[in-house]
Image (cartoon, rainbow, N blue to C red):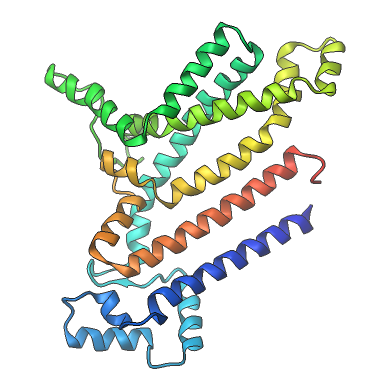
Length: 317
């Protein structure tokens, strides 16, 4: 097991190394002045000279890359001359909003999607199954931005016109000093990010449960007189969790890399919104930092998924 996880971690490190090479070539080796690309068209000649000295563009390419890699490994992602702040500081300042959105959204869509999928599988062909499949169809049919705008209209604009505030229309409040205010501001973003994903997980859970419930060991558990709840949650659900964990790892990695649409709709000012602003302003140091951070999130979540596989599936052990 340890050898398996060590191999996966080594492969993740190789992926990050490859990503760093790609980013370095794209922004520092490609034709053009890297200093001009980083500082923008409005930079003065004195600023360009200073940036070239900081980047070490007069040194060999390999030395430049290892210098870039060494700084990235210690958390130095460069300096945003447009914002006059280190990139790492800008990203860290935006992480709480993105983490709040991702963690809360994941908990909501798992709490909704998995029970709906189990309900549909246990009552396949019945009324509850049709209700569950209706929920899946509705959730998959709504684009995220449409759902976000509809939620704002129904739960923010209409109550405001009626003279009261039901839910805030956006913005992020820190978890401390008041967790209740934080959660109140996150209800609409959590609901928006959760509905579509809950439908995906409900469909996936239903399909896996229908397949697993027909296995011999499930029929044996029933024949032993075990309760239906024990059969479903202890025997069938554990086997059905493997594809769910795989899907969850991919979804969480994407959201951590930047839930751009949700953050833009609700004005959360997270990492996704920072990436959009960086692209619009051609702020390349921030783009580099967000890309590297997204790659790190993907690698870490996949390693966590591998650990979950080991715990769930004895065949891996």
